[in-house]
Length: 337
Image (cartoon, rainbow, N blue to C red; front, side, top):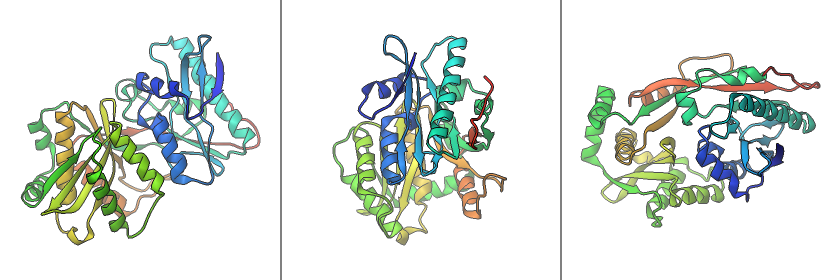
């Protein structure tokens, strides 16, 4: 077995991601490229993979250095991913080798901290991992929670799980808005441009580089995203961009027109997204991190807690989003396998 540095033009990486039950979109070259562009100067890629004697990939480890930390520019590095159906003995060895390599890279490059999470929408996280295995490799447990909607339920049940006050606002929105969907693989960029312009108008400035928007357009055109916009007459007043990968989807970003803030825009578009995902055979929709209270390693403000509650009112269930932090001193860290 050999450890090799990953370069973005290696097509084997994304093929591995599609096949591995440890991988979601966050492992792919799409997200690595986006992260490097988003955070720009100070970001450097150290991703690597392990291959067998046939030059087939056994495991991958997405890894980005930002300043003096291993972190996807403030986000957590995705977990290492293994090929499916490996023996327990080989899986254990591969994980041990991966975390030892992370330690070596960290020590040789002045890294002070590594933050990592276990991607929630992977098949193995949802079906297999019942604990935060990062703790076996000297990571401090700093897990939070996230909200997931199980789209395997029928539409009537999904509607019934939404809080009554949300259902009222959705019904009100259905009378106010028209909805347009920018479908995956669509080459018509009109609705994407409307969403982008709405986002810039609401923010009042350019919050990130033009290349990151180009990446998001490429994802949508490549089948990895869907956009739903809401309109009053012909004026776009809100939109949601949702990442699609395998049987999962993730609520990525949204924008609402500030002149229509008293309208139930987010309520209505979220329900449209849920219906579209359900009808297009996606199984899971992750709404994002749930903040409940102040923690030693996480300090949400009232707005964070209120947004979390707003998301929970769309139903679904709350599960642990496993995260870990490892600090590096002068001496190499040891870990148990």
